Each structure stands twice: as C-alpha cells, then as structure tokens.
Image (tube, rainbow, N blue to C red):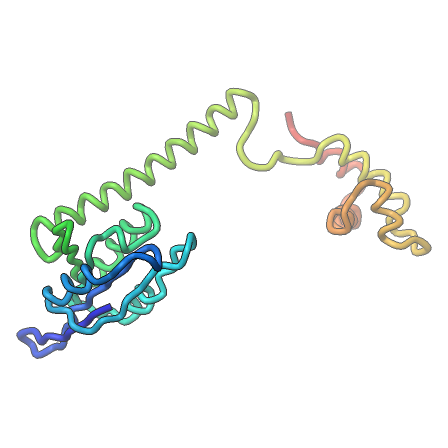
Length: 215
C-alpha cells in the first residue's frame, strides 16, 4: 500500500492510496510499485496473497481506514477480489462511500464520466448475475415440481417415522433403561431420540398419526 495526502479546496485532507498485489510469493511487485509512485502514491506497503485462500489482509485493513474523497490507485481492478462478483460488490461499496477508484492498466477512473459509466455497467452486471441465479433457482424448482418433487424439506413425517414414534411411546419413559438402550435398537441418534421424545410429550397418538407427509 502507498499513500500520499492532499488537501481539497476546503482544506480537508484526502489520501491518494496505492495498492500493489501479486498472487504468489515468486512474483515481483517492482513494476506496480514504480507505476503507483509515478501516480503520486508514496508509501510502500506490499502484499503477496497467501495460497488458495486469497486472503488480502493489507487491503482489508486499508478499506477500514478509507474516508469519503480518498483515492484508491491500483495496477488492475482484478487485484481487488477473488471473483468477478466479489470485485463488483467491493467496487460498488467503495464508490457508495465516496471513494474514487483508479486502475492504472485498465484505465478505470470512477471520478470521470466514463468511470461512472463503468460503475453503472458493473452494477448492471451484478443485477444480471442476481437475476440469473433467481431464474436458475426457479427453473430448478419448476423442474422438480414437474417430476413430482417440491423444493425444501417435505411437510410431515414418513410412515416409518410415525411407526417409530408410536413404538417409542411404550418405552421412552422407562426409568430402568438408559436413553441409549432405547434409541440404539431403533437406529436413532441421541439428538433424534430427544426430538421424538419432545413430540411424544406434546402430542397424542392420534395427533401423531396425522403428521404424515401429505401427498
């Protein structure tokens, strides 16, 4: 990270912040550093992304310190995130906070008309991706319904579960037995057993029989 402060017409300090990043420890930052220094960013705080996790600790710390009117300079915008969606979300979030973003190689400058057009395009891409996800989800649900399946968990219990509940009724309160002596022969886990016990405590046999999955 590089930064140099400037003052606007109201004598308010604004920062020109540079961010240099490479994806492996074997890559060199010199070219980015030189370009950022020429752009007027002075302090050098380099970052090399760690492995497959792509953790950007310096960028995260830098974002926390941003104020309205600050300028973020970087080699290319793809250094901002792990995916296109992440980059779009971050650029739009920073822009909403009044941060100016400048990409030296890709020529992005969100303080210009073309830059604002670029932001609008990114916002449209983000909305397009959300719509695409919604359409795919809806298409999947419709396809499942056409095959006789509904999305989400089925309503009610299977006949096998109902039978187990009714059988448990006769023994689940037997104080001479340990819980595991009761639920293991039924092939149940401890958590499932206690969930069933709660149902038995609050419902009669007739009510339980009506809890079957609706066709």
